[in-house]
Image (cartoon, rainbow, N blue to C red; front, side, top):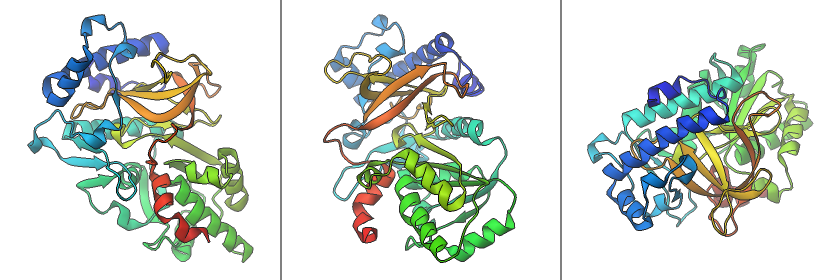
Length: 368
């Protein structure tokens, strides 16, 4: 099955056995492709003593630690075929991952993301409020994770407005006019978790105290990028949802889990609070002592696989996050595939989530 065939599959339609067959075939192909086209990846596989003949399914394939993309330039295409370079978030002095994309990989990432998100928001494009500032997405050739997230989700917006100015202040008048213009319509909101909280929610609370109230009962909020800073403020996801509903009537809220190293294969949160793996990706929880696979309900290190990366060997990665597999093919929302939750960062792992990094760099400026 080709990548074009896979992208045509509805994202949550395959049961366990069929999905494992599709993933195993595609990921084995990608492993051989990258071994033949990325010298550094080939050297890693050789050093590991990788033998393709011993692979029973995709869970047996080697994985790279995600941090390796901070230390090596890993690509499987000639320099001249690079059309976009994605960079991960990083605080001052930290190395950042660099992910090199060609036209094919970039296009497939966008196609997969459209299929995934549309399953939660519907197929139509909506008026969109970006809960960030316009300057973050200006460099179209060198994308930060934050800018890439904004531009990636912008394809779901028919008309768009940035809710914050470049000093991270809420554009109250602009937002009022926008919501009035599209009154009665569904509105898509997108932002990174800490910024949604710090620069949107808190400002809405202040304005409500002055008698200025926004009605976002027709809104759909998609947010991601890390909870670390919010945990320090004792704000759990459930509290985040409740507070937003109280201040502006916003009820349809979806967190997502994703990373620049596997752009396009995001894990969206359903209405039951579960993160879901689509047909384009999967998660495997690994025990830290021997990297064996965890059972359902057991906390382990999250490994992510993706059918999309052709321009770089990022199809099987070990993250720096811990998670718990909650089940497979039986979520009450009706979507097939694995569903899980993220338990947090590994101890002593670098702060690298988009909003976590932002909070570390700038939080003190806004905390007082």
